[in-house]
Image 1 (tube, one colour):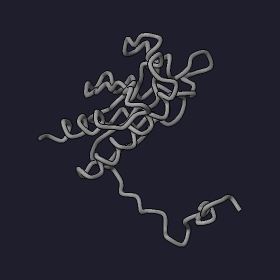
Image 2 (tube, rainbow, N blue to C red; image 1 turned 180 degrees about the horizontal axis):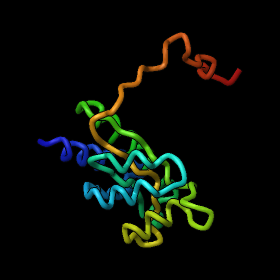
Image 3 (cartoon, helix red, strand yellow; image 1 turned 90 degrees about the horizontal axis):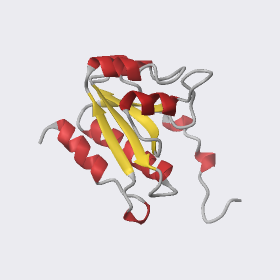
Image 4 (spheres, rainbow, N blue to C red; image 1 turned 180 degrees about the vertical axis):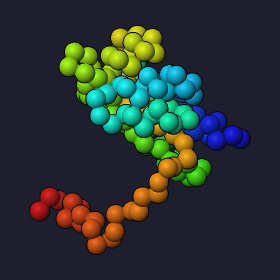
Length: 153
């Protein structure tokens, strides 16, 4: 099975609240469209211009009140699957971000891709071979104080 098909299968197997599956996925490999998507928000989407593949993670917001969470789960599963396939990925947050002073990033992407208004965009994932390898956070820098057992204090 080719890597893109593996990513698609991972996305479609992502768990959702009550098994509603509100998410939708748009795969983009057209360089012109990738260039336009790279302008989706004021900062943090420029990497999409050079990505060979982008996956827009969106959802029918009329079917679930927790579409954001369901899309977030799917997105991270896609990213972990990409990693397991030897690829890199980067998340461009679209939901609750601005394209410019007049338009949200979500509206920009909806208009660009012809999405109906009720289809909301959580993020765009750039997928490809990583340009750089980042080291994990060193163990001694992990914020272990963020872990609690049985209760808060």
